[in-house]
Image (cartoon, rainbow, N blue to C red; front, side):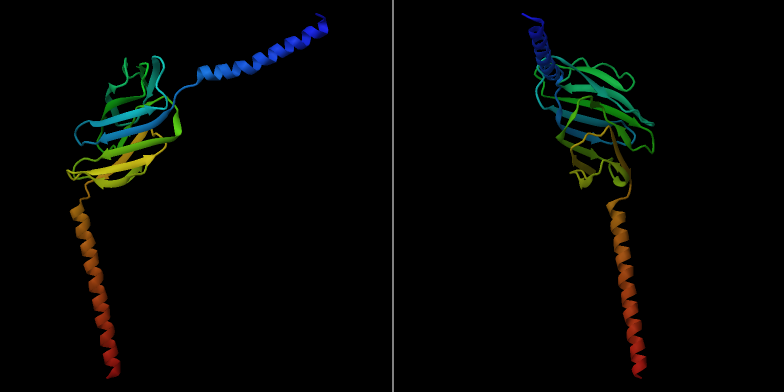
Length: 226
């Protein structure tokens, strides 16, 4: 083989390897994504709040896979307990802003429960989220139950629709596609009774003003006729 023939062959083989290598590396480094998250929160005054989150993967794991839960530090809100309910093993203690665990082979969803202790006046809760990419079309459902007698009166993150549970506790609902690391629901003791009272009072005042204005106008018209 002449020198002129060897050089093109070498370049051709190198080009084939160059094309194949990135594809193989991309296939090896491909990771699963989160396609669904269901988060349930019960906020309690004078006791720890309870957060339970179930995460669904796009594809089941093919082998034991390490996963990290990320925790965003927040003043006046401390995670006192982090527990693997199902689908996770070897969940280690919280180390700063992370906690390491393992997804066994064949895992398609897993559930984590955490307890948070808030200081008085604090309405934000850090959510332990997995260090796994969330699909753009993921279904993220968040439900927050406020303490008895409380209503949403201030800031909230993300945005919520408000409803009522069977035991007359306010329940906030959120549907979206992104997973927040902090949940905020600023509540107060504005009761339905007080709202109804003020609504009735304002309505009665407006009716009274209208009647007085109508009577005064009629009286003036009568005087003009005379």
